[in-house]
Amino acid sequence: MEVESFIEVKGIGVKYRSRGEVVIALNNVSLRVDKSELFCVLGPNGSGKTTLLKAIAGLVKHDGVVLIDGVNALRMPKKALAKIISYSSDISVPEMLSLTVEEAVLTSRYPVSKSFLESSEDIYKVREVMEVLGVLNLRNRKLNELSAGELKKVLLAMALAKDPKILLLDEPDAHMDIRSRVELSKTLRTLKDKVLTIFTTHDVAFAANTATKVLVLNNGVGVALGNVKEVLTEEVLSKVYGVEFRVLNDGEIAVPIPVY
Amino acid sequence: MRKYMKPLGDKEFIRAVRIRFAFLTMLFSAILVLSSYLFINQGHFYYRVNRALLGLLSGFIFAYSGSMLQSSLRNPLADPYLLGIGGGALLSIYMYYLVTPTPSVLYIPLAASIGGLLALLLTILIAEAVGGSDVAYVLSGIGITSFSSGVAITLYYFILSRAPHTPYIYAMLIGSLVDATKWKVDFLLPLTLALVFLYFLIAKPLNTLIIGDEYASQLGFNAKYVRLITAVVAGLSSSIAISAIGMISFIGLVSPHIARLLLRTSDNRFIIPLASLTGALILSLSDIAAKTFLSWSVGEVPAGVITSVFGAPLYVVLVLRGYKWR
Image (cartoon, rainbow over all chains, first blue to last red; front, top):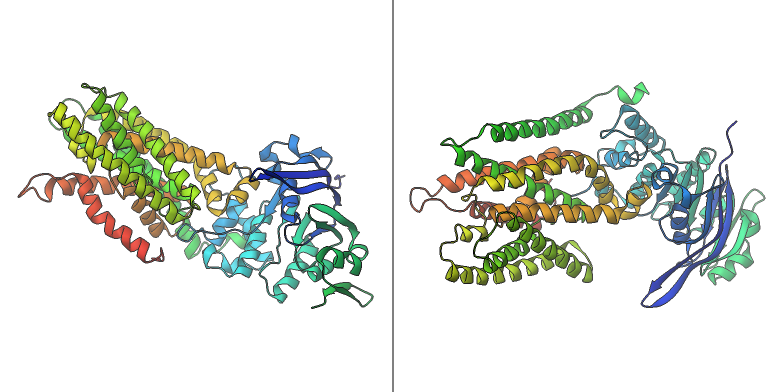
């Protein structure tokens, strides 16, 4: 029987130096994500959401431990970690050097494919992922010619093509129109049994509709952690964002909206 | 699985042809170079073979360095000459000529490498200090190049006053293949073979570096490490090529762009071989033009003159059209 995969983060802290001063980006944050959970990290700008994802992916130096299926991620070789974790954030592609969409998604297969050139299996996998995400028709376009929303979908394909166990998405819904957001939310929910996902967002409604569990960060400190309905309440959100929130509840879902 | 495999139509077919094309051209040129090297001896066409090899090999090295630098610095304007390597290498070669009356062929490439790497380091430091954009790199490179070539030209007059018969030292200012001696080929041939070997290790990491440092890191490639390797290798190898033939401009810049235009991709697994071959061809053809072009009136001109005259307008077109030429 397959062991249920999970990820456990214990007491993560990230510090960096800026002009001689020590800035604490994250302070003693802990969380646990089990399989079939969609985990969302919420918080205002500069609250440490991106830093948390980077720390989990092993891209920044940090205190504390990240356990993947109970194994300390720091002890794992980089190549092994690269096979199971995908970290996806915004990219800026230089014109003139830009790869096509399909070539870019193929680069994501590098950790898992050993040969110098792609095997037919790599191409099959890449096209399958692109079809699921509805970007197969873009495959011969250059990355820098895509609209922001299209690029976001391609980035998700680039994160998924290597068949990771853990998917870390930094603002996957940014620059998307509402329909694309709804589609993205559906995609993430269908994926949740295959890959353990942690994502950040600025859109509280997107989080409430998509995630199963939420961590709210403020100034690098975890403010609230738990199921969506328990955490995304008027008090918590008003306190963290400093604006008034109302939760619309129709019995099925509870969606918080800011009051303008 | 068949569903995605079946239509080997237009694009897939072109891709398959491209792969074969890139590999066959590289293999073919390697066989050509190796066989001509093995069969030369002290016969009467000894000099001509040496000269042809020198052109092919240094063109290869400049273009290879250019493609590597463009991808790793994520800058379509990167080139060994424009980033100051040329000027720095030339300056240190002249300094070496100045301190010793009898230069040793071993130390000329060494001196060039030190100067070239220092100049590249300085260019990168200045460019990063002012923001690290494409243009910052070019401007800081131009600054370093003009400064070091200015000093180099001054040193040139000192060398001449001391030893008026130093052979072909003037030719290094613009780059010429006229001084084709065997020791130069002996240096460049193993270097080129090492670069061909490195290509198999570095092409895939470079592709991920184009997309971004974080993206490369989460795929298990250390972006800083890859960038350091490419900068050092490009700096060293083009400095050694410069110590053989002098400062040749624009080959490292133009060849990768020609390759990208021909193959319609930026994938370094295809670009590096074709760009290197293009560079080798451009320099060889320029040298042939340099030997014959003005032979009716003034005789031979340096090959660097030809690459500048034809390369500079191409460069201007590249900059002016905002790289939108495809």
